[in-house]
Image (cartoon, rainbow, N blue to C red; front, side, top):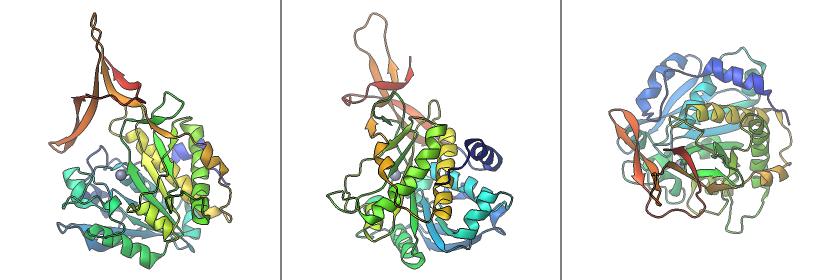
Length: 345
Ligand SMILES: [Zn+2]
């Protein structure tokens, strides 16, 4: 396994972070200045439309035999992956770094940024009709789900990366750390059997984990592999397309997910570099060494002098004036496993 040097990967991110796109609320329009800048360096196509008629774009780059499909924001309010793929495209098309050149020589990369542009606009998980696209992989009720499936069927990727955000409640089991990144090789059936396809997926996660443990040690979790019959990753995996789930999560004091964006970028770059440079995808045991994701955090603890009872709050994300505000909501029933707090007052 070729693992990228940590200094180098941090330097790359510093050089290619796209300042025109930041924060939590990333509607499709937020990408336009970036797409305008990139239009001569990538192939950009409209491959469908959302329920409200917003365009769904596809970006292609690279000319190699290994095909990689990436999509972001199938949940409209999970925007960290979208920021990371803009940074990634800037790096790949810059034509100055051996890592980028090797990736483009060995891979053809297809990206659907913001699969759910209606949900991105309203900062909701679901699409305009209230459909959770990540539970629509069998019925394909939503227009957006059909667009993704169509790209899967025609492109026939060797590997898929499914980019999401997870809530601040998640931490790394056995530590006092938030789960800044979490990975999953989805199951293909209820028994959670380690199939050939899952081994490939786990192998790519092992490469990403090796790099990221050096950068954010013990802040990486492994998502539950309980089988979700209608979920996208589980179904793609079952159809024979190894699908890596990346969940971007909380880093201390990083509610805008800008630190987390960098770590998502680094993990994704390592994952694609591994796919581009590796011949065998069989080593997977280290995947099971990644600790579980566990609900271990609340956002805020307020203690009162002389009072017995503490107050625990979880922040609700509310879109107001084109910005996401974090509104504290009192937790009525505490999760048993949650014992840490991102903030204390
Ligand atoms: Zn999600």
